[in-house]
Length: 309
Ligand SMILES: NC(=O)C1=CN([C@@H]2O[C@H](COP(=O)(O)OP(=O)(O)OC[C@H]3O[C@@H](n4cnc5c(N)ncnc54)[C@H](OP(=O)(O)O)[C@@H]3O)[C@@H](O)[C@H]2O)C=CC1
Ligand SMILES: CC(=O)N[C@@H](CCC(=O)OP(=O)(O)O)C(=O)O
Image 1 (cartoon, protein in one colour):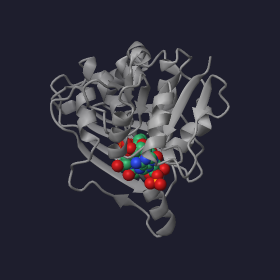
Image 2 (tube, rainbow, N blue to C red; image 1 turned 30 degrees about the vertical axis):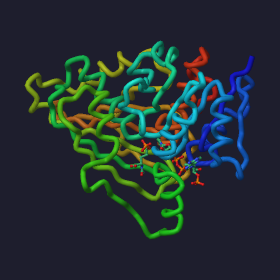
Image 3 (spheres, protein in one colour; image 1 turned 45 degrees about the vertical axis):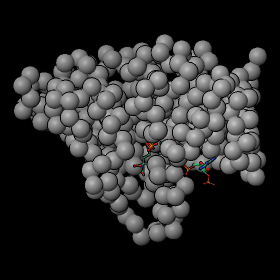
Image 4 (cartoon, rainbow, N blue to C red; image 1 turned 30 degrees about the horizontal axis):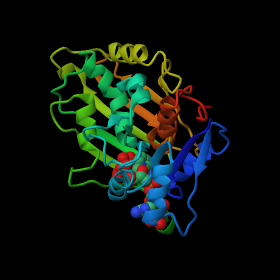
């Protein structure tokens, strides 16, 4: 028996990438609304009720509306928006952190944000292990491709071709802050400095740490070893070992990728470290994560249909 999937927002940036990953999957039957119907409430309601699993690829308000439209049905949901990432009744869709079983059993799964995916992958296991303090004032510097801002930012960067670098969220109130501190179990909000460069996709999320100023003075090697152990079973998250490269790059022509690479770089004494996550904002940062969660919710191997090469 096939599982009926409705992608609400199927022609947006995230929706299209999910469709692409599902198009050749015989386990799934896609419910598709044509252009005239895709924003029509009655048509969306019918589709939401007919689906076994709905994947919401919508702005936050529209995602909340979709949940209301689906009321009275048994439809399970994966929400790619930030509407439900710290909400009661929703399971945070980060299987490596939350546990695959919880997602397999969940009715409502909230996909993590792209930046929080990098931050949480680096910091949450280390706080849990007691290697990094929960009460530290963490800062995050991040660079994203412009597809991270959806169609509106894609159009802007394609029109304003003289933009070389854009930093933003200068009010220090980015919508990703609550999910970062909640799911890393931190005592203080994170200081988050995001930026965008004129590359379509990809992101580098960095947490610089003065390890020598922490009470327990963890060594960078301990952090890398703990991350390697934590993700040992994962085919999606890898902890990079070996030589320190001269640089990490975001490439203009990067192909879709659903993996997540974690690095721990340090100075010679190991007391200053740069924890860095490399990911595709549209891969493990959005659509790849949604397909991973969908696989788990359907009892399928989590990497089915993912782009991991
Ligand atoms: N892009 C990324 O890297 C990531 C995105 N996300 C999140 O995923 C969600 C989707 O983002 P993204 O794909 O980038 O955004 P886009 O703007 O590219 O796509 C959103 C889609 O939703 C459609 N839409 C808007 N309102 C409604 C409505 N009321 N009913 C039906 N369809 C509607 C839009 O149609 P129209 O254009 O005609 O208005 C558009 O096709 C957002 O919440 C975003 O924050 C999460 C992680 C990463
Ligand atoms: C480059 C850019 O604009 N990125 C988006 C985040 C993309 C993402 O993670 O989506 P959610 O907001 O749904 O989590 C931003 O900073 O708002």
